[in-house]
Length: 399
Image 1: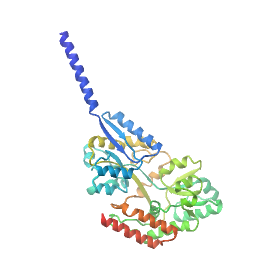
Image 2 (image 1 turned 90 degrees about the vertical axis):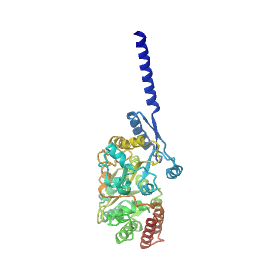
Image 3 (image 1 turned 180 degrees about the vertical axis):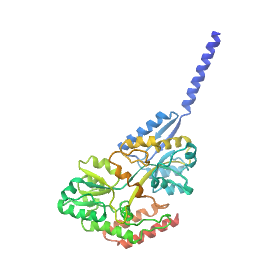
């Protein structure tokens, strides 16, 4: 009996060891990639990854950020060796879906009962393909907001402007009272288009099948925007000795700038007293929504593990950890934003997604070049709008 008992114990131990060894060898490695973030964002993401691995013992996440993400990921797609889970900017999502780079996620959503109802619709819709099939879920986002230097506004005796007329009037008072350039504006459609929206215009029609930028509403918006610079009430960052408007306001060189959540780490460390307000309105409220999704490569060899990771990163628990890292805004309304960022969240219902269908790269740099020419005085507003409309329609036709 003792011998049999000893044999039984040995067999049980061997089986237990084999089981534990089998569990260890069944661990899958999922490669996660995106562009290299700031040190703060990298630390926050690594914290989320650590929490995921702690609760998912059979999945190891290999985080491989890239310093040249756009080129590297395209090379990976061409070679058939993309990362399993990766970043997708909203502006390239239509092209990547059309090229078959992204795995459709509807089946995973259905099988796992993943709740998509909590995502802000404007963001969620940016990563849907034909038939409404989801191909990614937004990890975070930011609209634009009006940053104001409290001290300079107080010196001028003005409140933060909430309309175009108030913005111009406040700028005139700020210039007269302080001698500081009131506003920083960039020759960038990623800022100007928010003003076009505020004036009732748009880049594309609702079905995204034709350009609508050559319109009286757009012309009025560009005239207002350029007019602030022409009249000395605003300046480009280069004219202020800065690389971008966010740094210009952080350095106290202007009283007002229009930037997103990405400015917060810079301005918080600047020492200036500031406040964040909604974008000014004209005939309506309008803003832009910039977002990035997590997606899965259609050629991934670890589909289920990749989905497990993606659904954690974009689910309530994982996203809350990411937001608590202090570098992003939640793309879900059941995730609590950091204190002080409520203004941004309130812009979601009136924001237009920074996405313009397939072929975006074929015309966007041309459009920004045309805008720079208008700023330089070598192109008329009417000429620019007509040229951009033609370029957008040509790109849509090719795609």
